[in-house]
Amino acid sequence: DLDGPVFDQVTTLSKFYCLGMPLVEVVRSSTQNAARILGRPSLGNLKVNSEGDVSILRVEEGSFNYTDGTKSSIVGNKKIFAEGMVINGKWIEKI
Image (cartoon, rainbow, N blue to C red; front, top):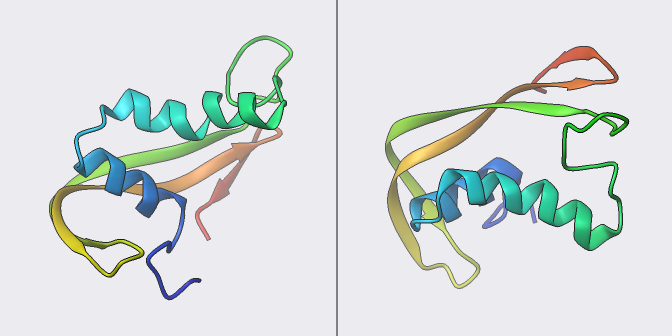
């Protein structure tokens, strides 16, 4: 549902980051761990012979409202934003 509480992947990652998950674990959960669960070893890493697509993210500090599926909400002090991605060696601006 695009009206929330799941707006996009970086918002979901931001929620976990604000709940105290270390940033490296937040990224790993949506890259390496997701690829492993999907049985796609060529994804989720930057090893030789992997697909090597990358998302370029930035973290901002401030005051951000987050809501979950039960309509409970928190105010977090960090938010992850997507700047763009590199796919097949080509830069793609965020849409």
